[in-house]
Length: 202
Image (cartoon, rainbow, N blue to C red; front, side, top):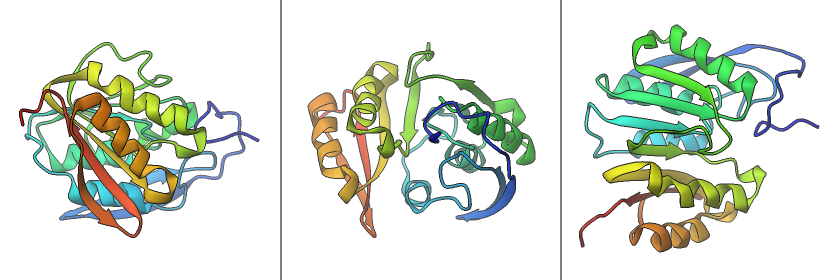
């Protein structure tokens, strides 16, 4: 069986369209079999997008494990002077993300490419966001947390959304170990939105 957190572009295709509203925005995403939350923007991503704040309008942002692009694309619309990179290991998801960038008219500010974790990431960002692939295992999720700090600018922030039952408390502990700080920004139906800042002053 092929999983959404692998390169599964050889799967059967059954495209569908998703309508999504966030704050004042109305967006549309193309989805398909073999990608995470193929029928709707999942609840965790929604919690992240509706509660993320303190982002400067011209921020550089990395969406790691982007899927078909709902987080990165929505952030691009919310912060119209931002520049956003979206990465995933799943080629079908990346192809959909590229289509969705065009569908939502933000081609000039977004870059999409394949990367297993941060392997192909060569720059640093003001913000890293992720709804990490918990089904890939704790080791994969914690690698996203551990390696984020070297890809953040000074005072940059890492935003992670996880369910309590899928490891949010251990992720918070790990983020404190790495960054020296971690705040629970929002609790919503078992989901935790966590943020850590690089070199945050006490």
